[in-house]
Length: 176
Image (tube, rainbow, N blue to C red; front, side, top):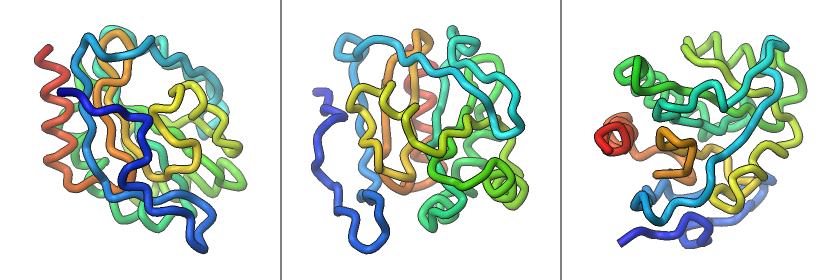
């Protein structure tokens, strides 16, 4: 049975941080329960064009992060580790950097963790609207696995439980 991604169960609220945190619960959707493909295009942290459509045919892992986000720093090693272990012919990683004041600030995070994939620069978080409720616009960090058609197949709202959790999510979608 598929769980809905738009639900608020597990969201803990903003508290003093000004953004929503969650318990890192994994949600997976059966292929028949997935909505339409996600379309996002724009510039990466270096000002180069980046378009999610270029990745169609691959399973795409999208990680929402910000250099300002302590929880993002906590999960960075797991995200990078999963990328290094799964990225290839069938899998690509793309980040969405939100709410950072400048691309230079965000690139310091990439350097700190040797992030091996490009990220959209999205200081207003407006690119998250493309997820049509699958991601709360203020839930950072979040990680979404898109199927080969670009549809949301799985998500974690909040800090990833572990590197292996993400790898397992990816492997399930790759095997479809």
